[in-house]
Image (tube, rainbow, N blue to C red; front, side, top):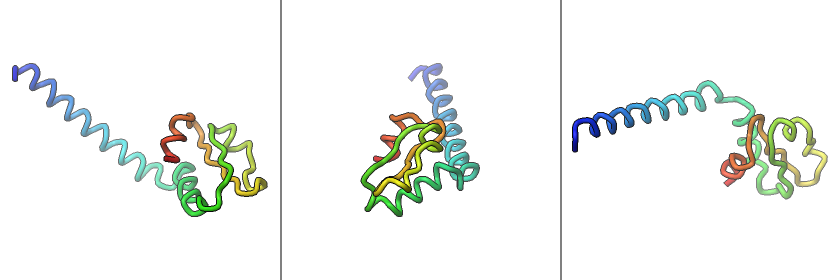
Amino acid sequence: MPRRALHLVLTGLVVAALHFSLVAWYENVVMADGVAERTLQQFGVKRDWVRVVALGDSHVKWGIAAHVIPGGFNFALPGETYALSFYRLK
């Protein structure tokens, strides 16, 4: 492997390692008890009886009172997109 390609691969690995380390630290330390984590914990406890799920961003999170919907759960998170919600639910 040429020397330049080796440097690029090593630089990419270092950047990737730093990136994933910072993401893990941010999720597990900074946001450990944030809205997203509390929502996931609450959904895990209630998911067997949930029949209606509200997905969306902060407008849905703070605008839908799921407790008045039989079998409802508000899974929306501030700044969340539908794609992120789908993969988080999956």
